[in-house]
Image (cartoon, rainbow, N blue to C red):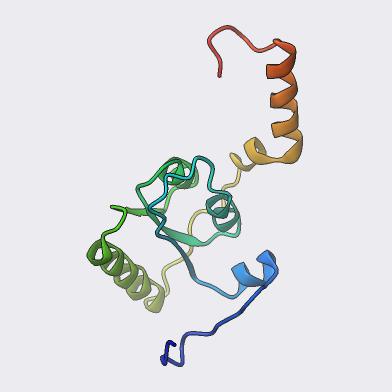
Length: 128
């Protein structure tokens, strides 16, 4: 439906291939998703992220810095953020900081270990 030649419909694509092919990831969710893994993937790929201030999205995106957060449902704010990012990309601005020291929090091993701690009752008092 989009006639702009810069828009390519990829269909089902491997995540690594997708992230290599884009400059910015837009996550305009209005549903308050608690753990938006697409944010984690995008940031680990070193991509700029424009996201809605909805659910856990801004919290996850703030881990790596460089995210632009817009009000959910605001087409005007989303368009302005996209234009700002695209202007920066055309000037040659770098992608987000590739510091992924926080990424270990979301590894399968870390998550499984945390579940086991919670289930066995070995977490420290007051932790969630």
